[in-house]
Structure formats: structure tokens, C-alpha cells
Length: 186
Picture (cartoon, rainbow, N blue to C red):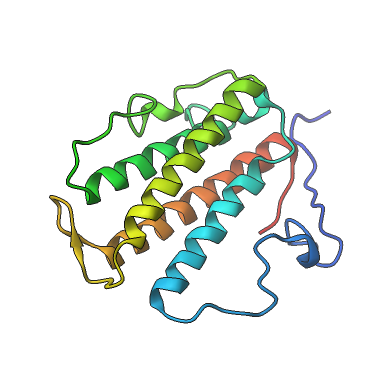
């Protein structure tokens, strides 16, 4: 008997998908956004949903499980890390006094080994709050070339960096989820 879970998907139409297209919350029915800023926001939105989808249906202890030893990475750690990243990005682009870390820093966000439903709910609330703050701050600028904060990062560069960060961590989430219960898909 092996400890390796069997690979599976909920999708019935395309076996390489996470869910069937009719059930995919990222499905736009073929409508693409108009313009560069809208396209960037669409990608950020979809990657955020993807990360959350990879966490759905798991128990809190599974979300906290470090699936690829010796790494401290877990799905719950990824959610915490992304909350820290969103806070950090917002700190970059505002002239306000930087807000303190939520969990002790970007890498410290992975320092969680157990969880309960209340902890998971709090992490998701932190992530949604920080995403909304960053989104609201970025939405103030129509010109993607506008340079923000002490670092003078352009809005365009920040948005592309956000896409890259979520995309990379969605890849991690794919592997972590497959190790936990064998579920695969886009």
C-alpha cells in the first residue's frame, strides 16, 4: 500500500481541468477585458480565485500540512504569505507609515504547522482585506506609468509583479494539493 494518493479531478468534460467549464468561477464565456489595466486586473483576479480553489474542500489540518519536506510551505502558509505580500505591496506604493507585518514577515508566514477552522477563516479574512487595500490603492491611478511610493515603482510594473507572484504560487499550490489528496487540474 502506498502513501501516494491517486490522481483525480472533479472535471468530467476535460480530465486535465480542475472543474468543468460550466462550474469554473474564472470562466468569462469568451469575453476578454478591454485595455491593458483591465487585462492585468483580470489576470490578478483569476489567479486569486485559482489559489483559493486549490484550498477548497480540505480540512484545516490538511491546509497546514507541509507536503514537501523539508520545505515549510503549505497551502495555508501560501494564503498567509500572499496576505503579507499584498500588505507589503500596499506599503511600497503609499507614502503612509508602513503597516506592520501580519505574521512576522513574508517567509515567517509559512511558520504554521497546525490549524483549526477559526484560524483558516482568519487567514482568509486577512488575505481578502489586504487584497482589497492594494486594489483600492492601485485603482486611484489610471496612468499605468505613474510611479508610486519611495521605490517609485510604476503601476504597470507592480501589476505585472502581482500577476507573477500569484502565478508562481498557484504552481506551488498545484503540487501541494496533489501531494495532499491527488487532486489535479488547471
